Length: 77
Image (cartoon, rainbow, N blue to C red):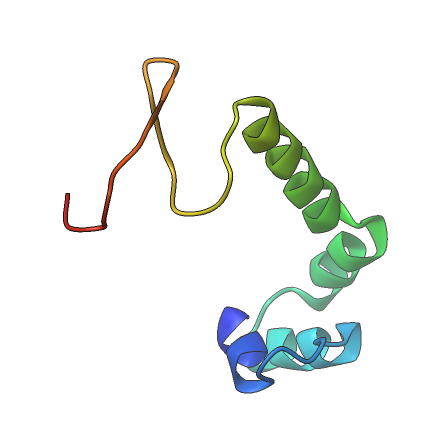
């Protein structure tokens, strides 16, 4: 699914495009449409974003270990 979004280079992927891809990779179309209609993924994303903000995380990737945000100068550290 994410590959479809990469191909669109930032343009919004429509539910119709997601559904077509789901059919192509043989996902259960009823379950997929149910998930899209209920907004489960959106609600989950919002929940996880709020949790990260509450912990003080500012972006990804972030490392949170034993209740502390690990800060590094560069990705090599």
